[in-house]
Each structure stands twice: as structure tokens, then as C-alpha cells.
Amino acid sequence: MTTHAQLAARLLRDAAGFFRTIGEQNEALKPQMEENANVFDQVATLVEQDPNGVIPEDGGAQA
Image (cartoon, rainbow, N blue to C red; front, side, top):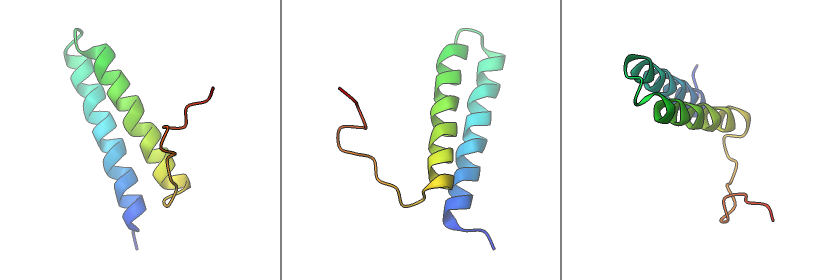
């Protein structure tokens, strides 16, 4: 049985793939699409590793 977190991670990774495909088809958009894809992959990893994790209000910024 698939959990909600597993489904969310799969959808995020699929979206990352979509962004990469768009970037491959349009060189002008490629840098932004790759950045988007990387963010979606990172969030998918967070959901997989710690589905109930919390992001600090400061976004995790370090001084």
C-alpha cells in the first residue's frame, strides 16, 4: 500500500522530470527549469526521509 508521503514524493519527482524535459526543449528556459527541477527533487527527498519534518520559520538560514 502506498502512503501519502510516497505518493507526494513520486509526484514531485515526476514534476522535476517535466521541468527537465521543458528545459531540454527550450535552451533559453533550461537554467530556470533545472533550478525548478532541483527544488522539486529536494522536497521529494525531504518528504521521503522525514514526512512530518518542519521547516524553521527562518527557512533554515544559518548566520
